[in-house]
Length: 269
Image 1: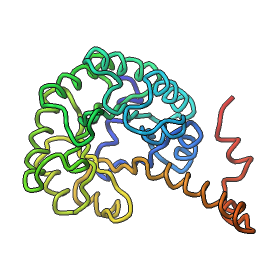
Image 2 (image 1 turned 90 degrees about the vertical axis):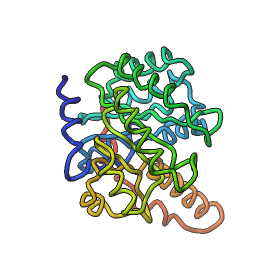
Image 3 (image 1 turned 120 degrees about the vertical axis):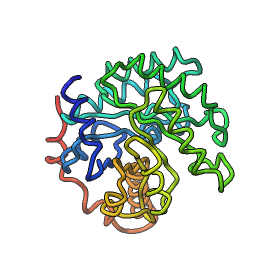
Image 4 (image 1 turned 135 degrees about the horizontal axis):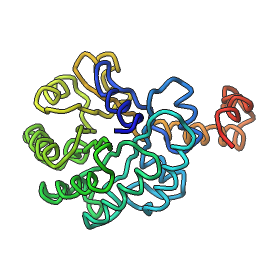
């Protein structure tokens, strides 16, 4: 196992790995400089930065090129969000995984939502084949974080969401996943129950309204992601700055930006 892949796997312990997700090389460099031991991409943020909506609208090559730029910009391990795999066939997913590994990522997230209908999840068998294809394409070193969208998409009756999530997690781990990502759940009781029921590191999506990172540590969560919220906050700042200048009489919104020299110094020629 290569050194970065080994280091990344070891981070899935207590306390939880905290990942403020990046969307380009500059945001990755800023996050690394803040002390992050690894960086994770957000597919939504990457797509937005390249002029596309989230939801498998970005083509594989554009996504891989973005991952390569991010991996080149930092020294810490990189894990990449590959949405549902950028292709319908398992062989397509294997090609994506191989390209992402070649670009420098040591981990991937792959989701089980059907890109043609976000409220529908792929069948157990179909998603298992896609996870196995990631393993085939990316190799044994790659940390596969299998995302289960039942809570996020409301893809099951509320009373059955927990059991359905655990059933999918068990199946995906047998198919070759290393960890399980369950976005859309934020109450401590359910998170604690998922930690106990899933025999693998659990990743949750956090943000305002979710338990604090220290509380998620206490619950046994192995990985905490901010997803697209950092990118969305950056774009909200851009909008406020624009409104302040265009409709107001102020530059206040840009007063606390990263110093030009500091920002320039984070990036490589």
